[in-house]
Length: 284
Image 1 (tube, one colour):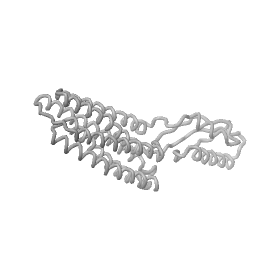
Image 2 (image 1 turned 120 degrees about the horizontal axis):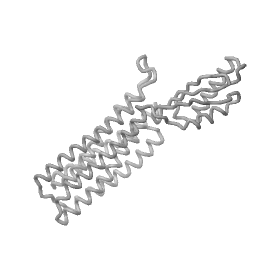
Image 3 (image 1 turned 180 degrees about the horizontal axis):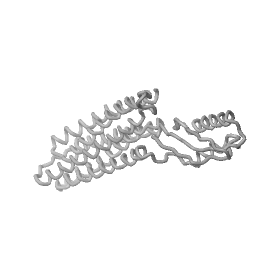
């Protein structure tokens, strides 16, 4: 599918950029003993790991329906989003643990002009990646790209915190370095929770489309007297709809069947994210 191919291309490009950004932060953070910069580099590393999870998820989601999965494999994309949130929570825990160790055993942190240059350059890259990936996620209606862009967005907040930490260290307040790393962990945890909220909508079969909109579309078909009992579920790009329609009690099954097909086609046309519509016919 062209959609899956486009998502894979986006994830591969973002993976390359994330690895470059992570390498710069981790290396220089280690050399200068800057825990906040190192923590931010670890966050960027998990950004890359989330891209790999996304690639695996998209591959699995693109598999065609089979006997065991008659509805297809699209929920694997949602599983991949869940995997990203788990990585974020693990990163959060690791940074909190290292912050505690640093507070217990302080190290001298070196701050140089290159420290600020690396952080500003990586922030510029992350901002561009976040905006582009977010736009692609909306256009392709991809859970995984939207989740990954949220992951990248958290990098911007954490990098800003690192800049504050570097300034504080430069002014002699080195104790703020591990404390700001704790703030970074908070941003990462918040992003993980936001992704979980979106994932839960799919797993819990939350309503995805306003029932009034589906009813309004179905009622455009001449012969359909009413539409009710509308239910929707699924992911951003794979929504399932079922509803009840009322027709004249004297209408033949053949005509009612034709009306139902017409309504199904119109709903899919007006709502491209809908992949399947099931309509139950009742006498008016």
